[in-house]
Length: 328
Length: 260
Image (cartoon, rainbow over all chains, first blue to last red; front, side, top):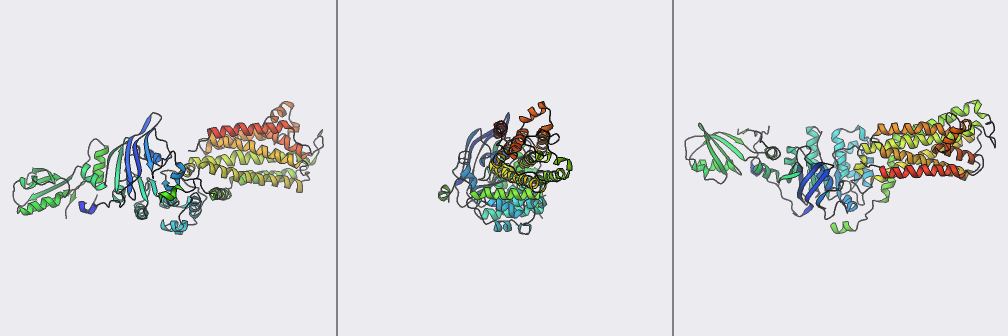
């Protein structure tokens, strides 16, 4: 599906300027009756980043963020949010953490402006409501009843309510589920705007493209455990099964030209063609080495591991076939 | 930022409760279930009863003598209360829980019980307005004497309101969804309004029936209100009966209420 090669340098992730954790979760465990929802989750979210929690349905993502936002009491483990205990310091936490819930509707009989205004009254230092409504692209819908809003508009209103108290952290659960592609892209741009205002965002999602586009780092949760935690690019590279390159050499050459490269893990002959697997700047390294040896690589095919590859390898026992990408 | 945050007030601003009451009132106006059932139905019934000639007759054996119309005023107040407290209040609350609005509130500095307070407030005002309309309408248009013992009347009406609201909150506490709330509300509504004397006035009930009626919140309420209308302070028994219903169901509601 992806029409472009994800060259590693295009996926450089900006590291947060102030790297100190605003959310620290350690050994979180939570069960409902006999169902163990979260088995062992530990993670740290740094100030100013967009941190993704990625996982299949029922993996324990929502329970994890519900414990972080103080809606649920963990069975064991420690959570610190802005130095506060979500259970003990509920009141203080709620003033500084905005939450957008996965489910739930607002009052159908209230307009956008009335709803935002109502929620603003809950906080000691609310933001400017009119500005917020405009920022979320709801200016034209200011006086529209909630029940008459589209799915995307409802979603944006829900985000507005998570931000209206001027929070330091926004927790957004299943942000774009049920939205059409256009609305999803608009929502993503909006989240980037929010991040640029210095708000740390904890994003729960099961969409790879969303995590790849937005997140500085992601934790992959499966069956109540963190199975990986890295940048999306780092995960794709480390857990996605590496990069693969196939080509027909213009003339025979010694395999050692390639096997000696740090980026190359494996070199195989497939008839007249060669298959090279490895990590990092595999393509550049191979082409460079071939050129130095006076060999030209023809009919090049590249397969680049994506976050989705990594995800599927992490949460399922058997890896799925990777997308093939052909050079122009 | 974190230093100043530590000094922030720990309680949500007072304006939050005002704002909640105002918006709940707007919702009650825009989706006027309580308004239609709790105000319109009893007022229309007052007009119908008032226009029926037979009710101007004095109840035989009543001492001091009262007309049938007078005996219906506290019954209509009972009708206001069942509509507002057993239908309007629980259904709105249960819907808000069902739609996770209470849960949404619990992620803000405002506790969901504030919304419950705002709901109770709005429905209380609705009930008071309807009760005033009934008493004033009956007095002005249908020759019902104004309550002679006003203090006793207000106390009786307030205790009946407390008892019915407690039952309504109990329904909101235990009903899993809006449909269950409506069914439970109706199950309470018919016997309560029957023993209040909507179909058969208390004066015409058999001794056994009247004895049962004495122990229902609205039977006791009608008894107490009618005494006050006739000029004497209500007897202790109906007041205690209403207080008991209020306390028992109020405590049960507090104990059983689920926020999500």
